[in-house]
Image (cartoon, rainbow, N blue to C red):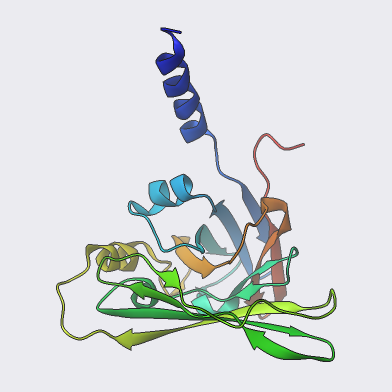
Length: 219
């Protein structure tokens, strides 16, 4: 029994050293390499601070296969095979800052009216968000799709949020470059998601790149 604390410490170090899932895709315009951080500890290690529940982090490295590549964050889409969620990247000010993050999830299905869960309200000056009461989850056939939108409501004057500055420093820059460009993207994916169900899409003039994430130890 005296060796149990050492066992748990060793197990924690092994988990921390485990490489996160990653993937790569390329076409005649661009090459993208991406790493997915989906669990709480991995996200904190990547960003340096905890993020609101449901926010996942994708670290990307972009490069042009020829000439220059114009990087626009709105050209990215993260989707889930599990429930059809489709998410575009958030800006740092939608996650942290002097305001309140309001996230609405909308479910749609063939022949079924759209329904929304209650919004997530978060104190962006340091408090963590929680879900307000809503009218339930999506109803319909298996073709239902989940989408989320975010708005920031001004919370008045407040002290500078260190998390906001950190995210602004680490986010993927939007620019045109002939050199590789790296940075982070922040998406909302609600519910428990599996890595194998997540797909990252990136729109280029040569077509849309599709990237799937795999753990280094997966066969």
